Length: 190
Image 1 (cartoon, one colour):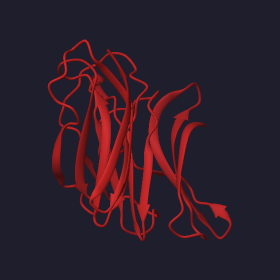
Image 2 (image 1 turned 90 degrees about the vertical axis):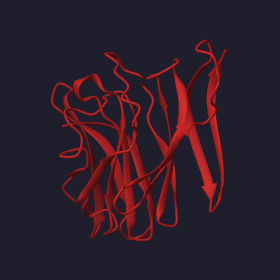
Image 3 (image 1 turned 45 degrees about the horizontal axis):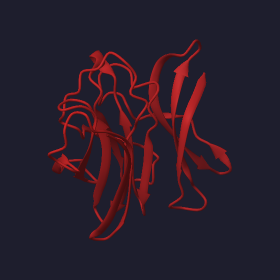
Image 4 (image 1 turned 30 degrees about the vertical axis):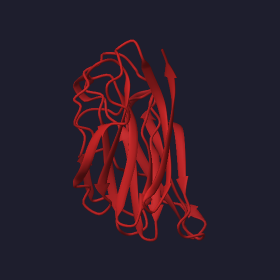
């Protein structure tokens, strides 16, 4: 199997968890998986993109793994039927299993190409705050959203900076925060 785009969390120094994209031989069957260090050996990969997201994941878009205590959330962009939206999978056992998954991006972006841009997020208590780029309306713009870390029920979602013309292109967002304070950065071209 072929792997790319790793991301790592260390909430337990004896059991770090890595999320990465995995392919069958020949770069087919793109999916997001996680593996946890147990007894000095990484466990068999656990697929986090199925059965929650239909089809394959976006094979050129990195994901991000978030963690705090026993909670872990794997963020990624899907590509099923060329709908390029963000999904998440949630774990409440330190990343050993991911029994819950959900759509985290309601933009419905239809694109028959590879945007090469994935989500970024952080955990704040029992919530996940995340940013992503979507070209669903008015060109490529940065969105921000929140979800409950355990069941991924959606909170607020919207543009980071509304009212920009289609000529302004935004991409590659990153977010960091602590409690009720956050910062978002991105690349912008006018």
